[in-house]
Image 1 (cartoon, rainbow, N blue to C red):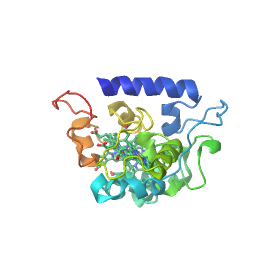
Image 2: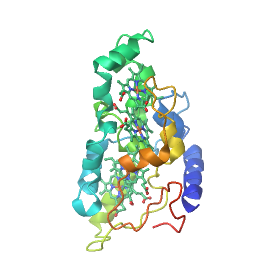
Image 3: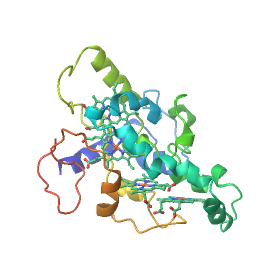
Length: 217
Ligand code: HEC
Ligand code: HEC
Ligand code: HEC
Ligand code: HEC
């Protein structure tokens, strides 16, 4: 419940703060609305690695890199992709917005929201699910420089909504029948394949049906 509220709050906050909505941001719809100067940018998975790939923090970058999400652009270069594209009259899936919108993070978002460090060839990256991370990276680097949390076992408490947690609806913004190779998306089967909890987290916050709905953290 708390997660749901937090997610809704975040959606509302983002909608108010930035004219690019969550869905538009990762489903690649182009919006003509102006971008606010303080809106977070997409920085790319490499920027998350220094903090989120330590073994004691769950080696999340390694887990992601081993997942199909990290290979979503390689898939678009395959023979299978060319065949699926040809059926739709598309010559090159690697250049087609009809494919990139689900296979590439930040596809179609305003260029002002994409940092120079961002590498589009890395497929479906962290920020497709967690939202653009530049402000989070900055805030955590500042906190670490001040020694906050030093020697404390993680996960550290950070302001709610600084990075969002993906839910089923977000998954379905890509895992839906618009995908030419659609496999029925069953949240309770798919989430465990990509889940990356902090090793010290007592229970997941994004719940599957049947998991205890007790308090977060
Ligand atoms: C300077 C270090 C640092 C960097 C870089 C960093 N993070 Fe974090 N992040 C943290 C810390 C510290 C936490 C608090 C949890 C913990 O201690 O692991 C956190 C928490 C999170 C959470 C959980 C949010 C919540 O509400 O609990 C997500 C999601 C996340 N980061 C995603 C990212 C993504 C995506 C990137 C890259 C764009 C990134 N982080 C880069 C330090 C960092
Ligand atoms: C931005 C679009 C996008 C979002 C959001 C997304 N996915 Fe995916 N997902 C993909 C693509 C594209 C692939 C296929 C990658 C490939 O094979 O090239 C994929 C593949 C997967 C696979 C591997 C499927 C298989 O055949 O083995 C799992 C599991 C998965 N996603 C789970 C999830 C879950 C759970 C969520 C939500 C928390 C989610 N995804 C959110 C685009 C997305
Ligand atoms: C396909 C969507 C997806 C992608 C891609 C993804 N995550 Fe996550 N992430 C999630 C979901 C869903 C959760 C919530 C897990 C839970 O509580 O069950 C989560 C949780 C987290 C957390 C909090 C874990 C905890 O227990 O406190 C961090 C930190 C995080 N992700 C970082 C990353 C980083 C860094 C990357 C890229 C290297 C990444 N994620 C890629 C969906 C994703
Ligand atoms: C609505 C989002 C979406 C769009 C649009 C999309 N894909 Fe995908 N693609 C996915 C997801 C999610 C998967 C993982 C399998 C599935 O559909 O459940 C995937 C998997 C794939 C795979 C791996 C096939 C497999 O069986 O594992 C190929 C190849 C592929 N897509 C090619 C394409 C091409 C080519 C286009 C453009 C014509 C395209 N996709 C458009 C979401 C999308």
